[in-house]
Length: 186
Image (tube, rainbow, N blue to C red; front, side):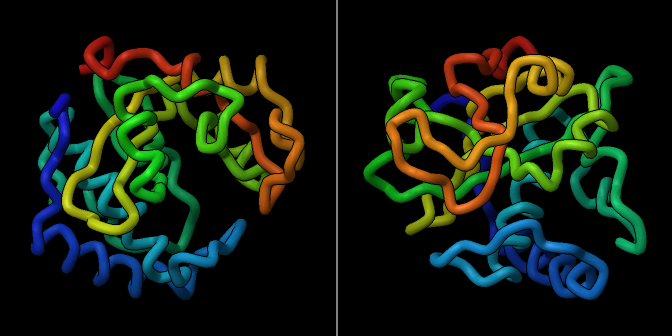
Protein backbone atom coordinates (compact mmCIF):
# COMPACT_ATOMS: atom_id res chain seq x y z
CA UNK A 1 0.00 0.00 0.00
CA UNK A 2 1.20 3.51 -0.80
CA UNK A 3 3.75 4.83 1.70
CA UNK A 4 2.25 3.16 4.72
CA UNK A 5 4.43 3.10 7.81
CA UNK A 6 4.25 0.14 10.16
CA UNK A 7 3.51 1.14 13.74
CA UNK A 8 5.95 -0.85 15.85
CA UNK A 9 5.67 -1.76 19.52
CA UNK A 10 8.65 0.53 20.12
CA UNK A 11 6.77 3.46 18.57
CA UNK A 12 3.64 2.66 20.60
CA UNK A 13 5.65 2.44 23.82
CA UNK A 14 7.46 5.70 23.19
CA UNK A 15 4.19 7.41 22.21
CA UNK A 16 2.72 6.30 25.54
CA UNK A 17 5.76 7.68 27.42
CA UNK A 18 5.67 11.02 25.59
CA UNK A 19 1.92 11.33 26.10
CA UNK A 20 2.34 10.92 29.86
CA UNK A 21 5.22 13.40 29.85
CA UNK A 22 3.23 15.98 27.88
CA UNK A 23 -0.12 15.52 29.63
CA UNK A 24 0.44 18.05 32.46
CA UNK A 25 1.36 20.76 29.95
CA UNK A 26 -1.22 20.26 27.19
CA UNK A 27 -4.52 22.04 26.66
CA UNK A 28 -6.81 19.66 24.82
CA UNK A 29 -9.06 21.39 22.30
CA UNK A 30 -11.58 18.55 22.06
CA UNK A 31 -12.47 15.09 23.32
CA UNK A 32 -13.67 12.03 21.43
CA UNK A 33 -15.79 9.11 22.57
CA UNK A 34 -13.62 6.35 21.13
CA UNK A 35 -10.30 7.28 22.83
CA UNK A 36 -9.17 8.76 26.12
CA UNK A 37 -7.14 11.97 25.97
CA UNK A 38 -4.00 9.93 26.56
CA UNK A 39 -4.83 7.47 23.74
CA UNK A 40 -5.56 10.36 21.38
CA UNK A 41 -2.21 11.93 22.27
CA UNK A 42 -0.51 8.60 21.62
CA UNK A 43 -2.03 8.48 18.12
CA UNK A 44 -0.69 11.99 17.55
CA UNK A 45 2.81 10.98 18.57
CA UNK A 46 2.61 7.85 16.41
CA UNK A 47 1.71 10.13 13.50
CA UNK A 48 4.71 12.38 14.16
CA UNK A 49 7.06 9.40 14.45
CA UNK A 50 5.65 7.87 11.26
CA UNK A 51 5.91 11.12 9.31
CA UNK A 52 9.56 11.33 10.32
CA UNK A 53 10.16 7.81 8.99
CA UNK A 54 8.31 8.68 5.76
CA UNK A 55 10.47 11.77 5.25
CA UNK A 56 13.78 10.15 6.21
CA UNK A 57 14.16 11.80 9.62
CA UNK A 58 15.30 9.89 12.71
CA UNK A 59 12.07 9.92 14.73
CA UNK A 60 13.80 9.30 18.05
CA UNK A 61 16.09 12.31 17.72
CA UNK A 62 13.12 14.46 16.66
CA UNK A 63 11.35 13.99 20.03
CA UNK A 64 11.25 17.15 22.15
CA UNK A 65 12.95 17.30 25.53
CA UNK A 66 9.90 18.80 27.21
CA UNK A 67 6.46 20.19 26.46
CA UNK A 68 6.45 23.34 28.58
CA UNK A 69 5.62 25.47 25.53
CA UNK A 70 3.60 24.94 22.35
CA UNK A 71 5.84 23.69 19.57
CA UNK A 72 6.52 25.67 16.41
CA UNK A 73 6.54 22.51 14.27
CA UNK A 74 6.54 18.73 14.45
CA UNK A 75 9.39 18.41 11.98
CA UNK A 76 11.35 20.35 9.37
CA UNK A 77 12.15 19.24 5.84
CA UNK A 78 13.79 21.42 3.21
CA UNK A 79 13.46 24.36 5.60
CA UNK A 80 9.68 23.96 5.80
CA UNK A 81 7.98 23.71 9.20
CA UNK A 82 5.52 20.83 9.13
CA UNK A 83 2.72 20.05 11.54
CA UNK A 84 1.41 16.47 11.43
CA UNK A 85 -2.29 15.82 12.00
CA UNK A 86 -3.18 12.17 12.53
CA UNK A 87 -6.76 11.05 12.60
CA UNK A 88 -8.20 7.68 13.60
CA UNK A 89 -11.20 6.58 11.58
CA UNK A 90 -13.58 3.63 11.67
CA UNK A 91 -12.64 0.75 9.37
CA UNK A 92 -15.62 1.22 7.06
CA UNK A 93 -14.32 4.64 5.92
CA UNK A 94 -10.63 3.85 5.94
CA UNK A 95 -10.07 2.53 2.39
CA UNK A 96 -12.13 5.30 0.78
CA UNK A 97 -10.00 7.93 2.51
CA UNK A 98 -6.54 6.46 1.87
CA UNK A 99 -7.37 5.80 -1.79
CA UNK A 100 -8.77 9.35 -2.00
CA UNK A 101 -12.07 8.03 -3.40
CA UNK A 102 -14.07 9.70 -0.66
CA UNK A 103 -16.16 12.69 -1.69
CA UNK A 104 -15.47 15.90 0.22
CA UNK A 105 -19.03 16.29 1.42
CA UNK A 106 -19.61 12.75 2.64
CA UNK A 107 -19.01 11.55 6.18
CA UNK A 108 -15.23 11.59 6.86
CA UNK A 109 -14.64 13.46 3.57
CA UNK A 110 -12.94 16.39 5.28
CA UNK A 111 -9.87 16.64 7.46
CA UNK A 112 -10.70 18.73 10.51
CA UNK A 113 -8.50 21.26 12.26
CA UNK A 114 -9.99 22.37 15.56
CA UNK A 115 -10.73 26.11 15.57
CA UNK A 116 -8.70 26.39 18.79
CA UNK A 117 -5.63 25.56 16.71
CA UNK A 118 -6.34 28.11 13.96
CA UNK A 119 -3.82 30.68 15.21
CA UNK A 120 -1.15 27.96 15.37
CA UNK A 121 -1.44 27.46 11.61
CA UNK A 122 0.50 30.69 11.14
CA UNK A 123 3.56 29.01 12.70
CA UNK A 124 3.67 26.23 10.12
CA UNK A 125 4.37 26.09 6.40
CA UNK A 126 2.68 22.75 5.76
CA UNK A 127 0.07 20.57 7.38
CA UNK A 128 0.58 16.87 6.69
CA UNK A 129 -2.49 14.70 7.26
CA UNK A 130 -2.19 11.06 8.22
CA UNK A 131 -4.59 8.33 9.15
CA UNK A 132 -4.81 5.19 11.25
CA UNK A 133 -7.50 2.54 11.29
CA UNK A 134 -9.05 3.00 14.71
CA UNK A 135 -9.64 -0.72 15.24
CA UNK A 136 -6.12 -1.89 14.35
CA UNK A 137 -3.46 0.79 14.92
CA UNK A 138 -1.05 -1.26 12.84
CA UNK A 139 -0.09 1.20 10.09
CA UNK A 140 -0.04 4.96 9.62
CA UNK A 141 -0.97 6.24 6.17
CA UNK A 142 -0.14 9.70 4.86
CA UNK A 143 -3.15 10.99 2.95
CA UNK A 144 -1.86 14.34 1.74
CA UNK A 145 -0.61 17.77 2.62
CA UNK A 146 -1.54 21.40 2.16
CA UNK A 147 0.15 24.73 2.79
CA UNK A 148 -1.00 26.35 6.02
CA UNK A 149 -1.75 29.64 4.31
CA UNK A 150 -4.08 27.83 1.88
CA UNK A 151 -6.11 26.62 4.84
CA UNK A 152 -6.23 30.09 6.39
CA UNK A 153 -7.16 31.69 3.06
CA UNK A 154 -9.80 29.16 1.99
CA UNK A 155 -11.45 27.70 5.07
CA UNK A 156 -13.47 29.25 7.84
CA UNK A 157 -14.19 27.58 11.17
CA UNK A 158 -17.67 26.14 11.40
CA UNK A 159 -19.71 23.69 13.42
CA UNK A 160 -21.84 22.70 10.41
CA UNK A 161 -21.06 19.76 8.14
CA UNK A 162 -21.69 20.16 4.40
CA UNK A 163 -24.14 17.25 4.71
CA UNK A 164 -26.27 19.23 7.16
CA UNK A 165 -25.18 17.68 10.46
CA UNK A 166 -22.90 19.18 13.06
CA UNK A 167 -19.29 18.49 13.98
CA UNK A 168 -18.57 17.73 17.63
CA UNK A 169 -16.41 20.87 17.76
CA UNK A 170 -15.91 24.03 15.72
CA UNK A 171 -13.34 23.26 13.03
CA UNK A 172 -11.80 24.23 9.72
CA UNK A 173 -13.08 21.43 7.44
CA UNK A 174 -10.31 20.93 4.85
CA UNK A 175 -11.49 19.10 1.73
CA UNK A 176 -9.63 15.85 1.17
CA UNK A 177 -9.60 16.68 -2.56
CA UNK A 178 -7.60 19.85 -1.76
CA UNK A 179 -4.69 17.86 -0.36
CA UNK A 180 -1.60 17.49 -2.49
CA UNK A 181 -0.22 14.04 -3.14
CA UNK A 182 2.33 12.88 -0.61
CA UNK A 183 4.83 12.05 -3.36
CA UNK A 184 5.08 15.79 -4.09
CA UNK A 185 6.36 16.31 -0.56
CA UNK A 186 8.57 13.22 -0.36
